Image (tube, rainbow over all chains, first blue to last red; front, side, top):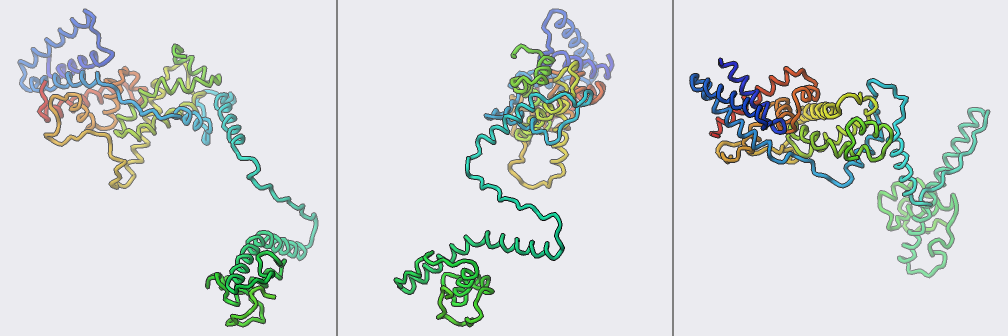
Amino acid sequence: MNCRDFDQTWNRLLDAESGARRDDGPDAVAARLAREADLGEHAESCPPCRIRHRQFETLREALRVWSARPRPEPVAAPGDVERIILAAARADVPTAPRRRSRSRPLTWAGGLAAAAALAVVALRPAGRVPPEPPVEPAPRSVSLDAAVAEARAASIRLALAASEPAARLGLAMLDASIAVADASDDAAAVPGADAPDGPGLAARVGGYAAAGARPLSDAARGAFGFLRPPSLGKTATTADPKGT
Amino acid sequence: MATMDDRLLVEAIRAGDPQAPGELVARFQGVVFGLCFRMLGHRHDAEDATQETFIRALRGIFGFDARRPIRPWLLEIAANRCRTALATRARRPAAADPARVADRPDDRAGLGDPDDLAGELELALARLRPEYRAVVALFHEQGLSYEEVAGALDKPVGTIKTWLHRARGEMAVFLASRGIRR
């Protein structure tokens, strides 16, 4: 045996006895003993390989102990397998098969995806989703001016529809605030008692803005300042908060 | 289901058997996780890579040649996921994120127990290059043959043998440097 054979023989020895490969039958044991004898004989006659021999003996023992330890296992969390299956079924980027046509259906994936979709529909709370607003059909042939005018009117209607509930609420709050401040029993100051429509609503909010009524903040007064009636001065603090 | 062989298991998944994907995971997650854990050296990263491996395997099950053994195919996917994770980790700034600390033993000199041979081997393993570590784990820990390891890591058998022999040599020298004697 030369030094190159020495390393090779050690590796064959380690190959044959790692974990499940270890064979303790009589033939295997005889072969192992013969190899060990050859290795020991060479190590005795070769000082560099003697050091190597000791190192490999230590490694061999360490591998035996290490291989016998429990293998690392993942920490099982509830629902792991279901998450894997659902993620695979989502197939945002389906993996293309290498050797077969994609015409075969992903039966299990389809079933799981359908089940997931049904679960989502079933779990959705009834009546909480507002109905879609009706969509008015567009006229087939209109002039540009008419189309612009219609779009403008539609935008205004939409803005009014969207902001009116908030404006009414704010106005009611302001009415109540003024009523408390004035200690007035005037029925007209009762929130919502005479809630105006359209321009009247805007004018009343503008009146509060011009009057510096609390609890409108400076920022809110600035934001609503454009609604101030022209008849009210910037410093007018005695204006009728209701804008009438 | 417990006695179903791997080929029948693949056919069951393709046929839409609802139990079959779970059986695939249960049967192979140990070996897949073992490889990922050894390659990545981090438990959470290994668990993520294991999950990604099975997701990709289930998505690609119709492209798999059922005449081949499935274990090397799964390990090949796992090794690819680990390489991607390692590349991502290498690009990440080396911030002191406690969650990124690898599950590695403390290898400072004098801190080890010379009688804890398995622990010392863990230290030696942790110092190897990731591909050497993967080969040692698959061959010695998971009991795969050279051919299976070669299939899993997509390398020739000769390369795998060379890597394993070098890995053993490096580990033997490391143990000696730590004063470990048999």
